[in-house]
Length: 269
Image (cartoon, rainbow, N blue to C red; front, side, top):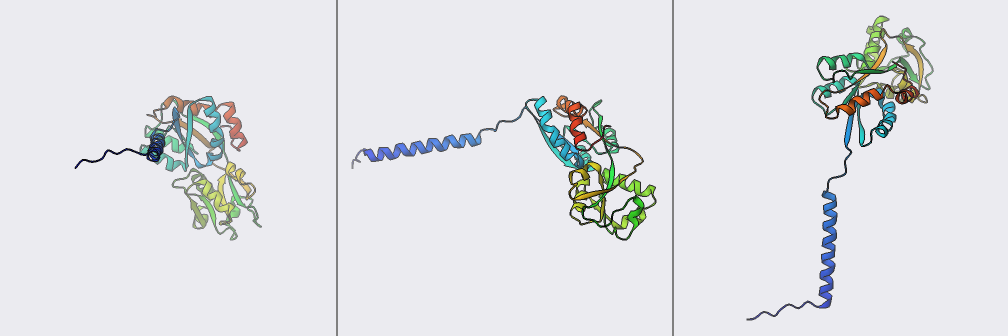
């Protein structure tokens, strides 16, 4: 039995051409999706203390403009948490801490690039209360009053602001009185949020943090600290973008960067 040859009709040919056109379009879209996305020449990862969030986000586009092809990627947390990440090998290029002690520990662990460390800012510790608070303490001794039942501060075990607060309370011989009332936060911004939401009666934060929520918290007084609150930064040893990391650290001391930090409430180191 001989099979008849298939002769497509004009309508069949049209349908086949349409089908092929759709297949080509689908293939083009698939190839586009599978193609690698254009990447920056270098993503610079900066791990920074939570209190630097606003200032560093403002600084990033300024640094990127001076270093075409570089994008700054941030990781904000408490300084101790960031150090632990770097020590475990997290892909970090620059580490900026809210205290000298944490960077000293990083240095002892050989995590910092030699000669890259710079101190770029200074801060102050303050006690804040909710904006609508009816009672405000005027000195650290006033926190003993029964009205201050819940007091927020960063955990002294892992947050520099918490260590500064505990040290000030110990110097005033008040730590054993205040500790049972303490609500410990994972970072200084969390302590600020507790006060802003009225979940606590007072809190220890940095002056720069109080400034960003001045409509929700009020500064009651500045807390004297035994040592100045300094912010150091350094490039991380072994960073594949070490030259760029060093430039970022140096940039923090530039007049342009210092102007931004001053506008955010930071003081010169």
